Image (cartoon, rainbow, N blue to C red; front, side):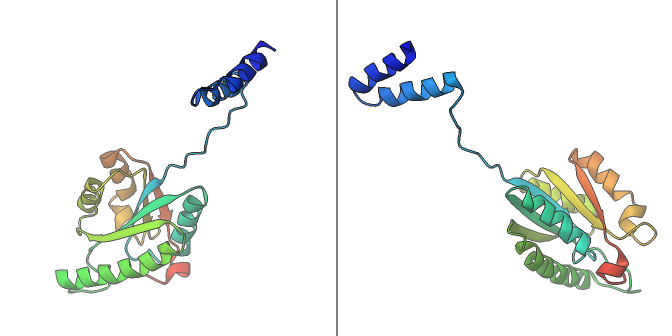
Length: 181
């Protein structure tokens, strides 16, 4: 009762905003004050090459964007193509650029803020370079299944987790759904 009387007193004698401050104080005391919802934009680094078009990666990114706003940075290491006996660095870069462009179009459809780059052929160095550009909350690594993937043979999911200290979510693309490697 005293609180209501004090509030009425301040409403009658308000000299420039004190009534509003008291009203907020009353709401906090009574536990009825609602605070505006603050969205934090999560930052995700997606590392992939041949598997960037896989539905498994698409589903993982859609789950992330459905839970709130995201900034997604796609990193395509310029690794040599494994189906070519001879290759040039320029050829590997051109292939990585094409895959990046296609991936950016698909990832943009998720509604996230999307950026991307072609990185070093050494995936760990490429990730280091990408992490220098800004903070990241999570790394999503997209590979082929064991037996097909060079990155799994290199133990890349665990190496990246140890090296960066970040959570690494490993998405395995099935050849039947993403095209035979």
